[in-house]
Image 1: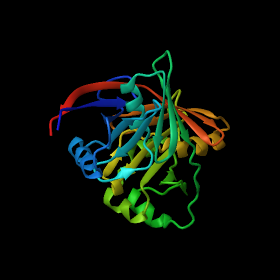
Image 2: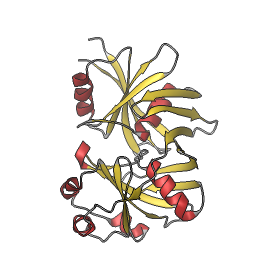
Image 3: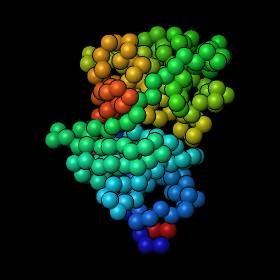
Length: 261
């Protein structure tokens, strides 16, 4: 095969080696799924985004972890929009059409579906507390994930869950969250997704599709600033608009290369 350009972008950050790194690879046409999976495993990042430009100028976009194709990914979409460098781009995905708009200040706005969580009465909360090492304030379920509210931001930041134990609860991922504990931060969270090969994700756009409506209701505001308190850390602006969430972030390209096989 001819050399295939590929790059890595740190998303939801304004500096390199922070935020969430995603690989971005644009093809003329998609190869088979086995090759896409193999590339994602080789990149070994939480997501690799694969794009193909459509005849109408829009893009088809797919996201792969090292272990699975996923239905929605915020940071790899942000990374792809950053690489394309267009004022506006529409992505056709498993979760419908997602629009990315780049402002004059360098922030990229992603128009995503809101995923408001509902009470998860079927969850073994006592068992979950054992795995987390701390008792939840409450547990909710969004389309993909369990959302777990903890007592405060310090508890979220210091959490050391048994990652292997989380798989037993059957969700794609586990969002742990609390109200913000620093000036200018409304909400803090972390995200664990061992079922799809991501023990802890540095910054998770799709998780904020659930966090935005959850905290907007509690805080009485539709515009929020969110910090994902992973080791790399990341910052998002959130705006709830009916059944949509605008996720805003910045991104930095860290390297460009070629796939040679």
